[in-house]
Image 1 (tube, rainbow, N blue to C red):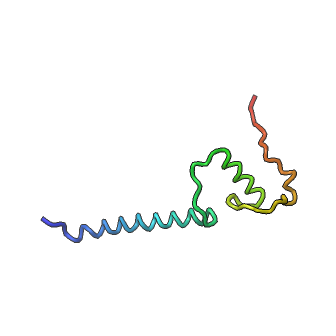
Image 2 (cartoon, one colour):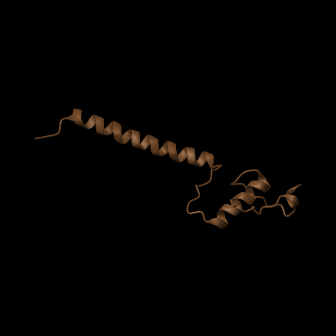
Image 3 (tube, one colour):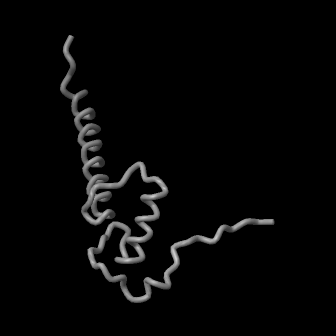
Length: 86
């Protein structure tokens, strides 16, 4: 007993939609990360470097090879104040 071709049509549609959504998600992630691969397994060091890059270049993924800090960077303190409720 064979499978009628009408049953294969919904499976093809579902598989096609999974493919479209996967490719769309890939391009959205690439666009949001300025064309670079997404970062994963970020630890505290990576987050601090991303914050530093944000302050230097204005984007979290941007990097600068300029050896002189931009204007106003010397007073931009990266240290966080610990907030405690007493």
